[in-house]
Structures are given as C-alpha cells and as structure tokens.
Length: 134
Image (cartoon, rainbow, N blue to C red):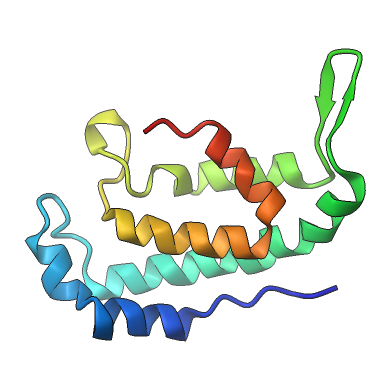
C-alpha cells in the first residue's frame, strides 16, 4: 500500500518564495496573525493528520466503500473517527470568518491543507466537503 508523504518543502517554497506570504498575509485584513512560523506549524500539523490519519485508511475506503442498509449508512472503518478528529482539530474552520466560528486565516492556507487531505485520501476528503457552506 502506498503511503502519502506531504510535500512540505514544496509548499513552503510556494508560500515563502513565490507568493511571499509574509508580506501578502500581513496586507490582508484580519490575517496579521498568519506569520511564517504559524503557517509553517499549521502545515506541519496538517501533514501529520494527512499522513498518520487519512493515508492509512485510504485503501480501506476503496475496499469497503459505503453501505446503505435499511435506511442506515455505514462508512468504511476509520472514516467516522477520522472525521471526528478533523473537526476536533479545527481543520474545517481554518479559513472561515471568525464571525461564523472560523479561525479567519487566509483561504490560500486552507487550500494547502485541502490539497494534503485530498492527496492522502480522496474518498474521505469528500466528507468535509458535504457539509461546507460557502
């Protein structure tokens, strides 16, 4: 089974050298706390979640799939627990407005996290998308 390894070095290069995150994020209203150190820590934790939680259940999801029996949906082993950990970690609210319970971080940071989540386990990554409100 293939294991996912987040391309943190490439992401750091894009954010720091190409997008010049420090200057850019400081210019965005409400994103002053998105310092390079904070962004790096968030990416590292997102990578750990993708690598340690989502990647190991990727094959299980393909093998078991979702089941619908007598009005009840059963998800693959580990999927519900991964979703609960995702929510408890605050990942769905990362780039949403604090007025609505979000953390108010830049959307581009959320995109990097979504990239890791989808690359580690595409089928699981659709779960948070089902409840996303734009």
